[in-house]
Length: 211
Length: 211
View (spheres, chains in turn brown, purple):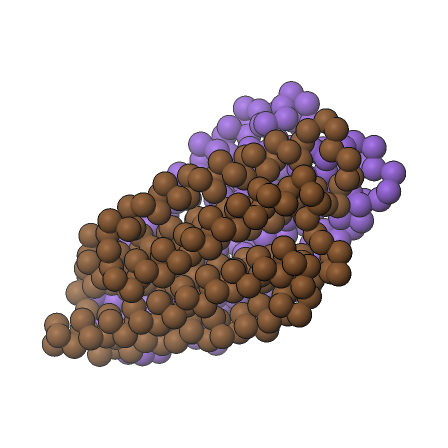
């Protein structure tokens, strides 16, 4: 019975890994579309989001089946709740990649990024995608050491977001409101993506190890 | 056995009602703090968020107990998942109220709202709080007719958010970047609050009626 339970957990975890992979890939592509003002690339991200949403429903079904089959005890339920939340985080990460892609697309063939913010947004996108990759690795290997690193990476994103705002709010900002709002929202979405990544990593570690 | 199941559902639902009440109240107070540039009022919202988070964990525990007690069938699990998501929506609504309060507080004793956006943001806050109250009523009475109205209310918020952006992006905007970013973020938070409200309402209807 408990062997069956663990096989069920592994199945859920495999779907979570696919979601993390998909969301990170989406954010990487969205960032490329943003940096190169490539509307077609942005469209790929928008079209691809459905695949992440489908996997989200798969996780819900796998967890429902697990619970129906296992007559779980109270501790098990906490694991199920953690897995559901992790799936929710990963689904939301896919949505945030779509937000970035839509901003790229709305301004294309112009760039949504004015020169003053380009290097910081590039750094945010790289840092965010690195966190996404690390979370995918954490989910795949259940390596608590790598999971612990994520908190520091998340701090780096917060620092970059503050830097971005200080550029936007400099008195001599020459570009008016629209590019500033774009940049502020992009910064927020990267920060949220990183935050959900770290949460997902933490929850999956809990889901698989119970600690 | 099934009678016990329904009593358990009612218990969860009562906690969800408390969360909806708390989140709406928080957003109402946050909006007052924003409109009156009242830092103390904003602090009340920030301090009060913990109570919503506590209830969120209560919902999780109540659902765990429900599942452990009832050896649920697959259909029951969908209800539990819906309740968990609703609780997640409501918890997030509390966070969004805190975001509004923090913006009010950061600018106080000055107002975070420049005159050009004041009436639209006021309308957004009123519409959002009305949606929150309606959701609380839906959760309390499980009235599917009221739940259906929520979709229209949510459209009204989207329209107001578009209006807000068109004001911010007018060529002659005289206030520079900071108040524009504040207003854009505030608009986004009200829109997200309304969106989560509608989702929570829909999920609780499903949770309680199974449809």
